Amino acid sequence: MSFTTRLTLRRRGLAVAGTAAVLALTLAACGSSKDSSGSSKPAMDHGAKASASSSATAPSTPGGMDHGSMPGMDHGSMGDGLADTKDGYKLSSDAGELPAGKDTAYRLTITGPDGKPVTGFAVDQTKRMHFYAIRSDLTGFQHIHPTMAADGTWTADLAALQPGTWRMFASFTPDDGPGKGKDFVLSRTVTVPGDAKPTPLPGAATSADADGYTVTVKGDLKAGMAHPMTVDISKDGKPVTDLQPYLGTYAHLTAFHEGDQAFAHLHPQTKVNGDKGGPELSFHAMLPKSGNWRLFLQFQTGGKLHTAALTLRVS
Image 1 (spheres, rainbow, N blue to C red):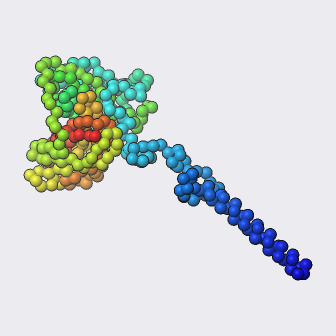
Image 2 (cartoon, rainbow, N blue to C red; image 1 turned 90 degrees about the vertical axis):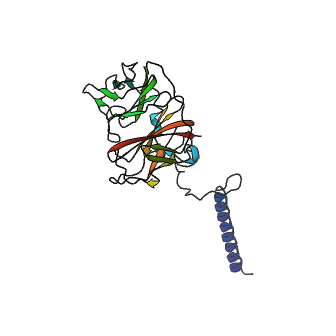
C-alpha cells in the first residue's frame, strides 16, 4: 500500500471518529429531555430560559386553572360581607335598634383608612351604593339604593321590618383613595324589638314562582369555585322574552348563606338588547361556602319589579 493511500485512509478514520463524537454529545444533551421515569418532555430552545408560567412556578388552583389570570374571576375578593371593616374602610351607624312594623330610615357612613367619610364612589350596575337588609332567618329581603348627603351620610329608606335580628349590608366601590376600584361589602346588625317568630328556611329547589312567573335555576355549584349558572323565566308555561333592563342588566341576583347570612352577588353575563330579555339569563356564580343559600332574583316586566326567592344547596 502506498504512502498516499495510507494517509487517505487515516484521514477518513479521523473524520468518522469525529462525527461519532459529535453524535454522542448531541444524544447526551437530548437525553436530558426525559425525566427519571423515562417519559419524554416537549423540546425546548436550550438557549432560552424556562417560561415563568411553567408548572414549577405557576400557582395551584382548583380544577388546574389559573383563575388569577382570567378576567372577572376576582369577585370573591370582596369577602362574605360579615364584617363592618375591611382594608381600613369602615361602615358606621348610630342605629343599633330600629322600630317594628313601620317604614324607617337607616343612616350610615363609610370612612376610609384616613378616618374621614368617603364621598367618592364609582357606579356599579347604575348605582353608587347597593344596600341590602335581611333578617337572620333569611326573610324580609330588601334591596335599596340609598341617597348620600354632601357630608358622606347615606340614608336607606326601609319598608316595615318584622321583629328579630337584621343584618344591613352596604356594597360599594371607592372612586378614589387607596381602595379605588376595589369592591367592598360591609355590614352591621340591628335589633327590631318584639316577638320574633323565625320562619323555617324552605327546602332546596330548582324553581320558584313570583307574581305568576316561574324562575328555574340550572347549574351544579361547588363551594369556593366559579361556575356558570343559568336562569330561565317563563309565564303560564311559555318562555318570557320581554324582560326590561333593571340596573343595567336583565336580572339582579344576590344570595345569603343559611346560619351566618354570608353575602354573595352573582354577576350577570347576558348582554342587554332593549326590552327583549329572556327567557334564559347567564350568571357568573361563586358561592364561597357549602350549605344552603337563599337566592333572590329581581327582574322587571311592564315597568314592574318582581322578586323570586329559592333555596339552593351548594356542595
